[in-house]
Amino acid sequence: DDSRLKNVPKVVDVVPFIHDIVQGLAPKGVEKGLRVLYKPMPDDDESDHDGERKLNPVFYANVDNDHLREVVQNLVENAIKYTLKGDVVVDVTGDESHITISIADTGIGIPREDQAHLFQKFYRVDNSDTREIGGTGLGLYLCRRLTETIGGRLWVESEYKRGSTFFVEIPRIDHDEAQRLIEQASIEA
Image (cartoon, rainbow, N blue to C red; front, side, top):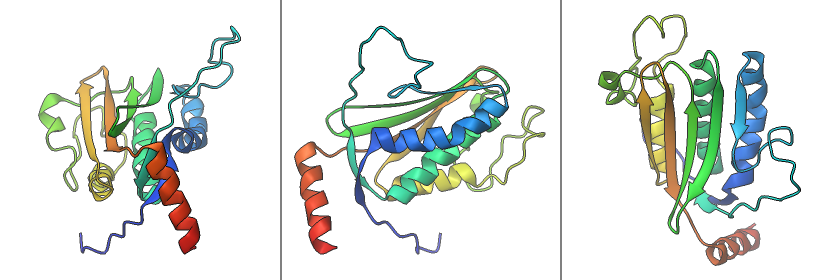
């Protein structure tokens, strides 16, 4: 809030970048008996064994990698925290100009009246489902701030008692632009 938030963009290949984050958090979900799935790169035991290799599109972004990591980590941790049974599914999709990271859960969901306030500082959904689960009400506020800092946007779609999906949309750059920026960074280094 005091305008000292740095933003140091660096080219990142989003699919493997997010995979590493999800892999690091998956044990937390497994401890709770949840399945934590990463759609673009499913673990071997989750994928079909028909010999077909799945080719993912390459999604390059020029964003502050630490900010992106913090946002996705927080959203995946929340999905695990607020899901008592079922799945947490992370996906990466996109079009020519945007990359969308989605984190879907089968958790407690968010009542419609709370969704508009979710990304405000110190806001916590207060009901019998959330009282047992700790938190300060700062995580989603910080996620929103960091997402906006890297030129993206953050939103949620949720149904109370059915689960939530959080979406992080960031600007996409094409392969040529990514290569140019990578070369420029190595020259400056």
